[in-house]
Amino acid sequence: MEADRGPLSRTDWVLAGLQALARGGPNAVRVEAIARSIRVSKGSFYWHFKDAAELKLMMREVWRIDAGEGVIERVEEARGSAYEKLQTWAGLAGNAAIVGDFHGLKLEPAIREWARYDHAAAEMLKSVDEKRLSYLSQLFAQAGNPANSYENASLFYAAGIGLDPLSEGGLADVAMPLYALLDALLNVSQPLGRASAMPGE
Image 1 (cartoon, rainbow, N blue to C red):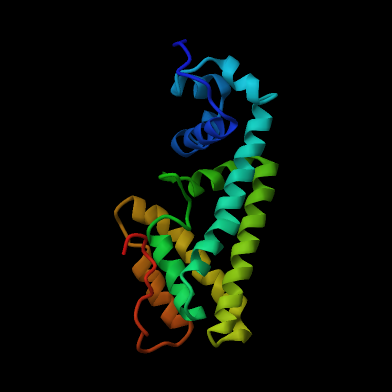
Image 2 (tube, rainbow, N blue to C red):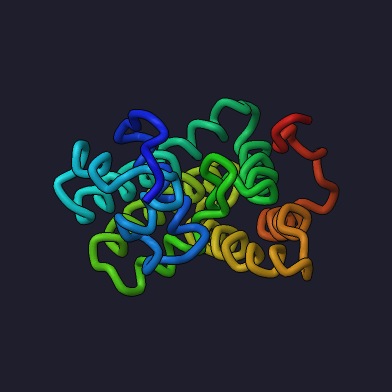
């Protein structure tokens, strides 16, 4: 083991755990492997956490807040009509912020894989999905189709999740199909113009 590179905080360890999850899946979230990847001893870990279970708890909580409340806050900050907010969601999805970007990591596919084998991760993911779907359903209702708002939200949300792995393989864009689906679900024949959804635009 290499010498410690300096004191690390709990946040540093949580981010390192999320990096390990994104890069290697659930089996990569092991104290010794994470310590080796960030060039510190395991003693640094046990200064902050009782065990790996506590680290995973913090990882789930950080992602839950960022992927749930954090994503909705970013859409709300864009302001505009409900239709424009849905466009913003589509643009963010195309730029990875909805489907799992966390400090540059494409994390959500790994979170969903983790949830297949871990009950606590599955419960956390369900709470995030419910929060996102509830928010999108409200936007669809406000945009003019309240009778089918939840069904439309479900299709729109699932499309973003499904397009992400195709995008990773270079087989599809994410944002443009979501824009088209949004207009189809709301029967918008002439789009009102794309919201400024992409960070940096």
